[in-house]
Image (cartoon, rainbow, N blue to C red; front, side, top):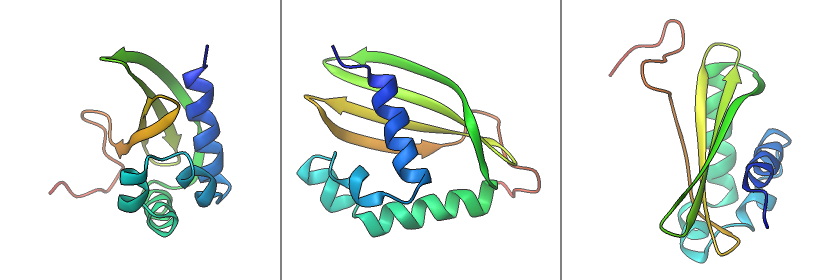
Length: 112
């Protein structure tokens, strides 16, 4: 049985260490086209510029929805928390999203 939380934490470790190609290799073909390594790198850099230095995983949750394993990692950055959600089916990543927890905005952030 796969430990999906450990899988998601390994993906996060790759992001933190700049191993964007390693993350990309886990994707379905469709997701790989939508999120090339350069885009992953730009998005991670944008997060750390906006939220500050990554500190730790504050919490994690794993649920199964219609045959898809979904892991949410609550990431603690210097200025705010953010969620990394990874959806896994048949051993490959079919979705990866980042977003703020409800009501959580970094200090000084402007709501749009």
